[in-house]
Image (cartoon, rainbow, N blue to C red; front, side, top):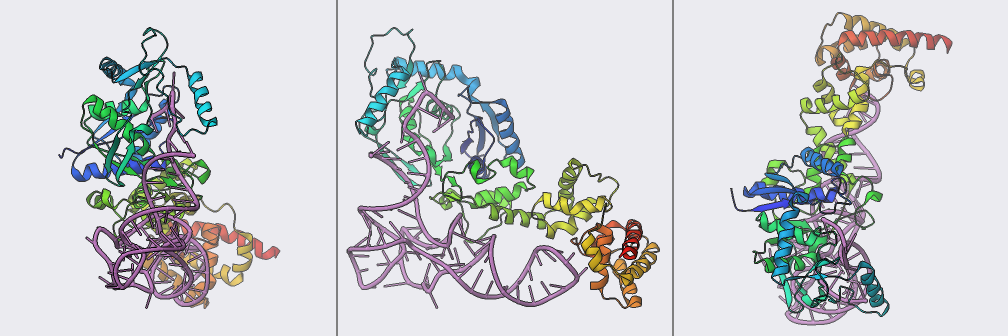
Length: 472
RNA sequence: GCGCCCAUCGUCUAGCCCGGUCUAGGACACUGGCCUUUCACGCCGGCGACAGGGGUUCGAAUCCCCUUGGGCGUACCA
């Protein structure tokens, strides 16, 4: 085990979204590669906006993606005593001070500053050196930020970044209601958990100098930082619901495989030459911060779909069969008495981009056709087909559990005696068996369905076909 | 407004650090064809980019500066 300690720190104000998942993934990958420690910390200091449902949803999504953590989940709401103590410590050391300005006053000052065209919009430091209030009066606690000098850090992804301290105001670390704020607790916890590398979205770059000041005030070592670029929508705006599904679990619901999402997410912003497909083991071996790009990336649902298609195509039929069964069952399809799931899957792997599509294509295996595509029947079924279908029944009845070759042999026999081409018989069989015109190869369908079931369907269809032909 | 970050095909990217091998490579999407019992898969081909302008240099996608464009922040949210 190395001394690398990283964490993913979502705030439970909604589901786990695509961007958060990628950040979590990068943390996870690096931790596993370096045999370090991956910690999950739930940042729920905003009591108003945090919900249990969101926490559950995030935990669920982490599990689905296979991002297991070594420590946690740790909830900041359980740690308010620690934060209180640290605030008291900074207060005692004069590194923080009580501010009695009301939110209304501040808002007014802010508006004034904007109106006057000032570039200084932050807190003006009114209470910085003031002792004319009793500690009991309503107040927030502000951190005493250095007013001069520069703060620099070397970002592992972006390189050196520096800020002039005079651009920073004294941030609030404790609200009027006594709860601590993000920029403070994030430092307290990262120190307490001995986080050595902070990997997070680059929307936090601006917070970093403030946080560094707090580390310094605490006398704690400053960790390394790696700021990952944002994920944008097709319009280059920050990814939001407008751009389609942004929730990780929504992709599960849409029939995506977790490995597809993981592969997509990691390649959005990170690369290893021209390689597109990565197993998890490969990612753990090859992932590195150096090859993470610096620019924001646009989320491309098409490419994600392509990867999903790939993983469906190459996935283990047994496993996929299990996932398929869940979907089918939820649709009210009884899979128990039907053909084997793995066999069903293997006929559909090249024909489905998502599990949902696969389920669409699989339903006919478990349900006899309720009707037959009328237009197709008219076009594909005539007297010759009916005769051939009848003969096929006879051939198949005696075939028992024929394999693919056996099924093909039965068809060849029928074709030979009737003089029909497969192109003239196949479609009719397909309609009889599935009700429609699109399905896996007809030999495969018969093989998977089994001869007995095939004959039953053929006979059922034959009745309808004969009747249709008469009335025509 | 101010600050920070960023800039190669429509999109994700390779190349950039260590300038010439780049008439800029791969992938998705789009598109033409082939294969074919349906639907698909697959295979072969095509379209398509170094944001603009200045430098530095014999030579710049690669180094420097400016402009433009985009993103993020500027909360008693995280």
